[in-house]
Image 1: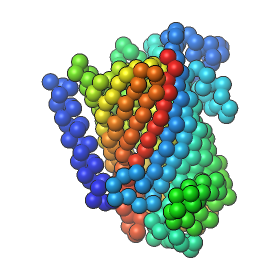
Image 2 (image 1 turned 90 degrees about the vertical axis):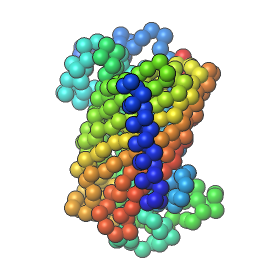
Image 3 (image 1 turned 120 degrees about the vertical axis):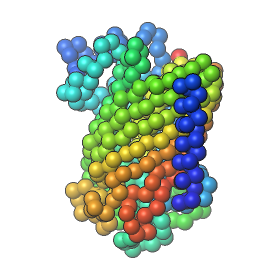
Image 4 (image 1 turned 180 degrees about the horizontal axis):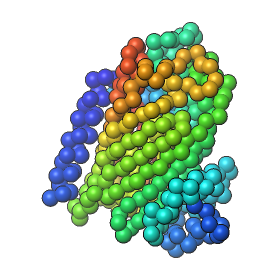
Length: 361
């Protein structure tokens, strides 16, 4: 795995350099629903997406680190009124930082996401605590996102509020069921997970995406600044590109906002036929990671701030095909540098993912 991640990062770097070279040759008195109706173009549709990540879907992988994730996303105006929607508290936070004021006249979009994901050490056959490897950890969550697109300046702001519970047995139970059905090694150490038994957690993130270049040959390059506070507290800068037969707006695709199982990306609402490859790289300064450092509850294994790496490099490549009937399929590979400074857990992380989406134009 350590040998493959540098290759992925080098491949992404080459794609970005080639792409860049080619390319550069607050809640008011009106209700949230009323605001959305006013700011969303008439006739705009909605979409859903189902995503599944697994660390076995890449060359040379093993069942370890970020091991799997599953989520379902609903995008469109109806996302505001779904079960457990967080759009109202998200609107309060956005209003506090005057997110709407950063765009004179923007097009708004909403999304809600439900999901779970988990982490394991390298050796999942042990029931004993493994003090020299990363801990078991899992999150069950719901997140709501709000995006404002400024078409005049080609800038998009997106905020996301996530609430969840870490330490539930559900994440481990599901992994055990999958391994049993596929005749794989049974994970034995979930009783040692971070905050075992359950503990609430939350995260707020905000990003600013800028289109750097777009040409008629089907190439886009953009940069993204992002910050988050909560169970993952970090700041990052990303550079990403996609190239091919592109028919969807650049703001409808943002894999740089992915955080483990949380996709946090728009999935579009227009039925078009398209296909393209994409890649990117992100440089992160991470202050806190609950999946390694724990939260308020005592955990069998956790790491202090001076035992984790605070500078992380993440890279990704992928392929997307969209059909005229509204369906689209994506396969991606992601990886990042080691999160721990020493021990058996000091290793690069890599995983694969698939996403099936349906647009209703």
